Length: 479
Image 1 (cartoon, rainbow, N blue to C red):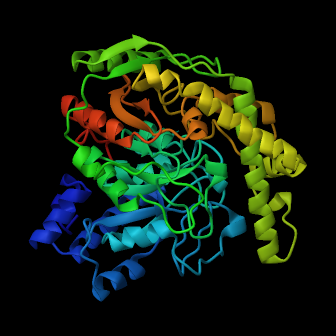
Image 2: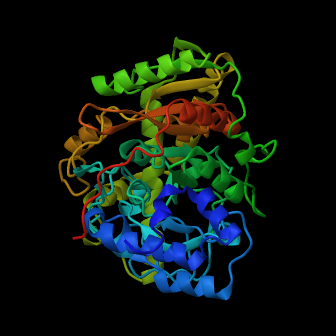
């Protein structure tokens, strides 16, 4: 390494401060980021679309004087549009779908001075919890190259964990920020529904299940990026309750004495690995030592209708994605165009009636009302993010014809996060625990609707009590 050797010692805000002071230039930071991508990415496969020329051109044209001016940044290759570049959704079907506009969030990132220099790996259509698309190939966890990085923001998490960038854009429709953050030992916050706009082409994603934000190494970077991203855009169908002030200013404020419930029982009833149970018990003791009131409890809701309604909406949205591509291509999409799990989801979505879709939306809204009273008695709920530590690559196979096996493997790995996509509540993965064989286990903290500030205050307290910023994986060599 030759370009700015100290690059990885700083978080995004730290790099921006260096630029403000004139200690380093945005081009020097970009060169440092690119050098690391070129050296490490061949073994990891986190960055799938380099945008180096575009990034250098923006720097030469003059960056806005935003709060993150000059910081190298990566966006997920799903959902966000950057003019002149394809958004592939991790799919061969969209490989040449070049955007003719910027998403609202991209515009906000660029206005903040971030230097977008590439896109990160994601499973096809973001439909699963591992990042192994046929289009680009598997994204490998730097803590163990044979393990999943999680999904669907697996590329984002690996890029941050491997030191390519201090923070990266991510999105979460069922856990897709929090799961990769958990798998890679990072901080991942899913905001409240409607906190971050999805436009301009969409008012919401996955009928409100999905939210955009970021995966970061530090809590304060997540807060700063949320300040940049948050707030409605004209025409949004709804938005989150306005924040009282800056999210960044919440970092370091005392959280007060919180009432924290914890559970190690998955809503699905599937078994939870003893290492994940141990992680929750350890986090509960830490919270108690910090002065919080901790007790074992969990919200009650009817799981089976919730799960079926979630699947119905995802299937319907998958079918809509294929229909939109058919219209653009002027031909029918066939099973050969997509991975098998996508095709099966789309075929299921095609069979759903309008009434079934409306009933699914109503079911998830009812779950939100069933869960809300629990959070009147408790400020937060603590659980594992996942039912197991990171599973081997190939364990969740989106091309298997064995549908039952796919579902069994999926549900044996994930099942705590998606409740809060349905309810719209903010929820975060905090890296507080590693297994005996050095695999990260994320801890899930979820709060009332609109209370990201509370999560950030607790996260900062936990970060100070048990720092994780400098805990890093051994990195692979080039090639």
